[in-house]
Image (cartoon, rainbow, N blue to C red):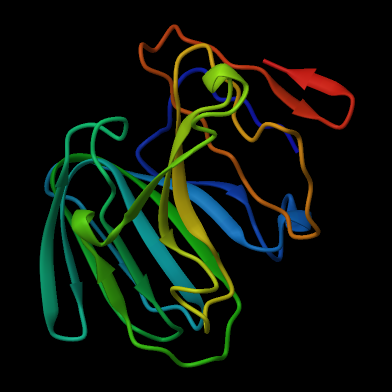
Length: 200
């Protein structure tokens, strides 16, 4: 599945993959929520959900708790993520124009909601000392099967360094994963290999 969006995202929620709709082979929902300052979004679905702040400033509210998250650069700062099980009511209010990555999946298992602040996110350097640093990259793991064993999702970020390969040597695994690319500077580019096909 390759989806290109050269013009950015419109205000509101843009679905890219849907577990029970378009691109359902990805097995979960993935999309981008864009809010103008003062706007809010509420969610109370019977599904596991996670919101990762890409850029901006928002107020997360859930289960009588609240947290103000702020992020100027997804390249220079770790993310802030709110992760909740099914049926938890969440309200997100934009305190300034903000962009948020949203993941959702069916999951009847119960677990505690968790707010991952920047210092809670594990940062690892992968590929260092190998092949003259050809594949060095920074991997930010928010949660995976070890951190959140009752989750049906994994969430994180990879910061690819200029001119380097990511995930070298090539690999595959049975579960699908989505790579949502951002570039700095914006005229930057990358090449992704999917089987024998190269996509810019």
